[in-house]
Length: 138
Image (cartoon, rainbow, N blue to C red; front, side, top):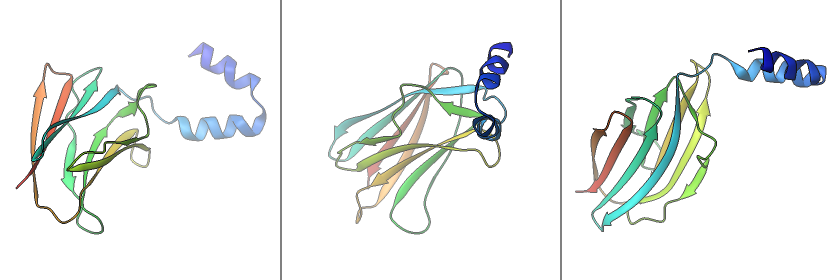
């Protein structure tokens, strides 16, 4: 905490205000990795690796383009997690990772799915730190 305080003192006044507003409460967990594995034309796996057990709230969007959203509360993206990744799959086109701080530090992962297909989801937790989301074409 002392190091953070010293760094903030060295910043200009305007930057101090911005840093204070966006800092918020410290997250308990970090999303360390998101990886998409193409298993077959009917199934793709998305791996999420954390520094601790982190069950998300996962759902399909109800309006607009078909997407799957996973919300990880009390979590921040790690330094090596890209904010946008072209998955280029047959089911998952794009993986987008973003921060949402309205109700606390959250990470939202949005999977843009190929339109015109019907999907089902399967969730698996492995080793207490890996969340596996399996997207299947019906």
